[in-house]
Image 1: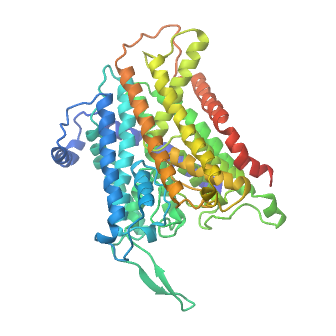
Image 2 (image 1 turned 90 degrees about the vertical axis):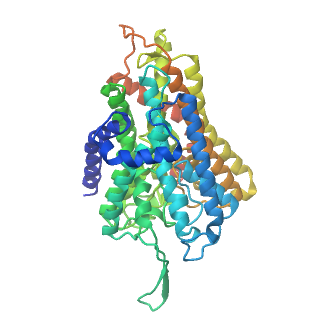
Length: 555
């Protein structure tokens, strides 16, 4: 029965790709459509307020500048709200101001679409902070990543260095995609029992006669954009395992579909915008193969359990899982949330079997299995460029992608984007093991403790946000170091990829010939798949061997 649930969920997600992708093409085509009658007046009002000229396109440098400036301003706003929430309205429970290091970490987390939380939402944030410092950047950070991906596609498919207008892309995605879908999802979640209120906590009397304080708040509105925007995080400390965030199998289904909806559809958008759908499907096929391998691994490992459980007569590993979801829905959620770089969890990843925990780690390390808003596609295309370059060297021909020559400048930028990810994971992890105070935060000894620290920095670098909960990350070292990792992991890649798009956009197209290496064939899909797996294995296998693999072999 569980396998059928998984298959049906993935089938629904697959069927939604084309219609949602076609709608997104209309949103970003800049052509007059019927949508303009509905959303145009609101959008033009925002443009006037911001002083944006809708028809004015940006080159790669201007686009990057707009991304960095707007995100910096929003990050300062988020930090200020968190540091002053005690004095601001909508704080019925009297929650105190957030400490400076934690506020920096949280601001960096939510502006980068990571949504890593070193605090417990129900006790650490006021309602205003939940809405203005958390829910608000969930819209803008996801829209930023998506806009960058669209700009990159325009660059590699266009004829000049015009990537569109960042502010127009940002506004259109929020008004035409994120807000309408989030509104519908919020109503459905309220229907299923998720709270949505500005009233404070309530005190209830339990069956034993004791008093219990029950936290509530604007939960449903946060949950809808949390998954649609592949943000992650949670209103409550236990995230989507909490019955107020994810009470029923239907809400669990909605969360999974929302996490996959836009990342998978963006790949279809890529194929349409470059006028080569076969190219888009070849990239989608490579990502899907990796996803299915990872999903199969975590499903099998959690259903199989551990030798210690077998010795007790217990089949499967239900530790850290909700009974209402079971093995299969928990494993599917685990694979999806790290494939889509969401970071939301409906079970505790720290309680997964060693190889079950290997799966979310590996997906974040590869960071190109669908990915969040734009991230997975950009990283996937980074490997496409690398594969084309290597194959070109093997046959003695200047490599080409979409009719543009891949030369030294593009490869230098691609190398920066490719190398920054493992550097941001492995170097801070090593530093953490050299500091006695950061070692004291590890609650589990041995290989599992290594996995906890490795997972934290991997989650930050991949802008994922999920965690192995055995690590006490609310310390100055982890708050500052993970905050910096999140910022560098987000923006260095954005700068490099948009620079590549700007460089390719100015190059003349090369006519296809007999010697042209096609990148829209099953053969290239296999090459791309092997390139991703080989580079990922060579880069991260030593660290994984010390963590989850060693723990598995030691069971």
